[in-house]
Structures are given as C-alpha cells and as structure tokens.
Amino acid sequence: MEFTLTGGDSSLVTVKQNPPNTPVEVICDNGGCSCNNRCGLTTFEGGENLTPIPPIPLCVTLASFPGWLFLEGGNVGNWPSPDTIAFWIGGTTREITFQPAVASVSFFYASAVNVTLEAFDANNNLIASVVGPANFVPPLFDNWDPLGVNVGSNRITRIRITGNSNQTGIDNLKVCSVRRTCCKTHNPFINANVRQNANVRQQIRPSWKPYAVTKKHTSKR
Image 1 (cartoon, rainbow, N blue to C red):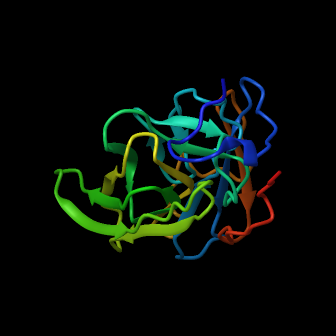
Image 2 (tube, rainbow, N blue to C red):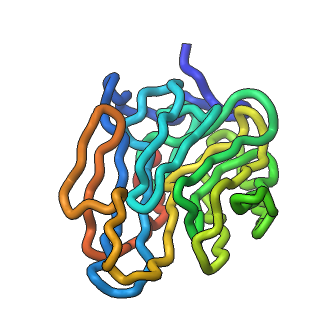
C-alpha cells in the first residue's frame, strides 16, 4: 500500500524509489575566501521512504529533525528537487534544531493548510516568524512556495514549523551562516572535498545558485 499525503491522488505520479542506505544529498556553498555568508542545502534526496530523517551536517551546522520522515513519491509532484521531501505524521508542529546557530533558514513548502515558520535563539526567545498560505490544489501536492527567515547574525538554534499532520511537506532546506572571521577559523562542517557516509552525500559548489521550481519533474498519467 502506497503512503500519500492526505487529500491527493498518488496515481498521477510515478517515481523511482530510493534503495536503502542511499546517502542523503547535501550541497555546500564554500563561499571562496571572502566575507560572504556560507550556506548549505539538503534536497532530502537519498532518504528511504517513510524512515526517520537523521541528523544532517549542512555544511555550516548540524541540523537535527526530531519526528520528521522522508516521503518519496506518493501524491506529490513538481518537486523543487525530485523526488523526496520531508513531512510528519501526528500533531500540527515539528521542529528542526541547528548546532551551531545560523543566520537564516529557508525552504519550499506544499501544504493543505497555512504554514508558520518561527525561529528561536539559544534562550528560546522568538526572534523571527513568517506565515505562508495554504497552496494545495487537488489532486496533487505540486505547488511549492518559498518560506524563510533571516535575522542577520548567527542566532537561530531552532525553528518550529506549524502546518498539519500528513498535509504539510517541505523540500530544499537551506541554511546560511554569517562568517565573522573570513576564513581564519576552521569550521568542521566546511570541507573542500566531497564527504560521504551512510547518511549524507555532500557536493561542493563554488557559488550558491538556489533551485528554481519547475514543472518538468511532474509525471501525470
């Protein structure tokens, strides 16, 4: 039995399932040696369908995803990056934590209800929030809108996403960190080489180019 987000029709989408233990894709912006932000993004590709999302080194921070699951295929289409997303079952909220803190967090979302993104600092103070409108149009979750917050300095240690169980998904989670020392301090999450282990596949890109949402990945029958 194929699992789908509530309210859609999975018969309209065909995907190739990821095999077990495929590394999760992470793309790094190494930023050269300037005082620009460093950024990291995960597409969630490589995660095994309906398994918990493990902690992922996002180039500048370690992101943890308590209560989040991978979802591959189902009744989701037009992915910002095909064809795996993050979602949850049970309750209306989920959190993602970052160690060390970051300056900005953004992602694309598809949801049958409004989505609220809240950012907190190490003292649990709410330091930024934004709301995105519901964008689900039956029969597919194939409308993806960007949502993000930027507080200008490395203060975000946790975000809370409010949507709905089995009706809200995110893709292409991106984080950026402000560099204060301009390459003079070693950051263990930045590496000039491709790193690979059982959970994470990292690719280094010389400059950041955000994904564009396109329709080319939707397969309808």
